[in-house]
Image 1 (tube, helix red, strand yellow):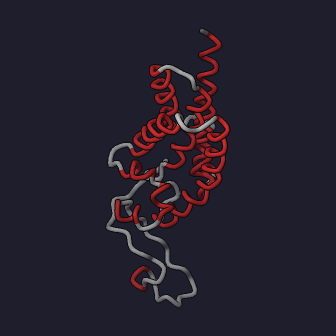
Image 2 (spheres, one colour; image 1 turned 90 degrees about the horizontal axis):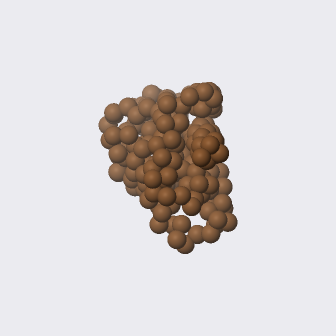
Length: 192
């Protein structure tokens, strides 16, 4: 499960002796968890992406806000992108997201920080691409089902969330949530 401790502002940990020893210490100092803030997000372009252009900084349910951002951005970008363009964007977004999300998680000192929402964005883009065209009500249900799988993490999503670490783990469990969302939608469409 994603966690976000409430600690002080972010600063560079690389050569800070107060964090566990002198800079020439043979063992690296443990990274203390840090809080994602607007200042932290703007300190590096990769943080801007991994924090969903600010949507992940929401103090309440950042994953849900990040998914709302994905929905809104899909609606805007879908006017300009073809299915092939979306496919390339999603594949590149997933593989780049492994490094981008891992980088930000490492800087925050948390395995899977809740403000990192790039995983939700890419996974929900995939879901929206696969269900489009769909009515607004269908989009709402798609959003609800995706958020259910992403928040509750029923097996096997929970298994991957707990076992896979780093950027790949951050990205992969949301991809599995997208798969189960699409499975539920496909089964529902078969019954109506």
